[in-house]
Length: 188
Image (cartoon, rainbow, N blue to C red):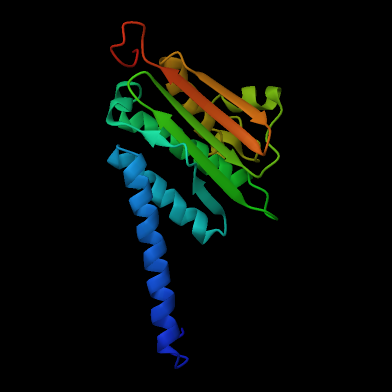
């Protein structure tokens, strides 16, 4: 549009700035997250958030080593993080939309924290939301809703982890999974 308006210098400046910001985000995520599929997911979710006007950030504490795949497989990480981020983007406050993701993991444990600016859920509603077909939005399973938290809960239960929700600095959902007792990775 800027080129069509006869302002090519501004168009180049804007494109350069956007490219630098994108590259910075890519560099940051690849530096702290060793799993390529998880990096790709986070970059995709970041782009979705930007399109929707939602501020998306990865916490400074985030650090995921290769060994975290001993706790959850790459597919399980994507299921958990993807569904939690999708829910957060849906639930954040439209007046102040933000989503923050924190992931810390190594061969001993994996912690995933997704926070958003929304109101969150009371404990009873959160418990119901972890069952297939329950949604805080109308339609439930028939509308393709009510699956995300249920899938997250299944992965967490399979590995004897914990899934909790709190309303602190926003709505905060936390997943914690530890390696099995023998230190041989995730449990079946």
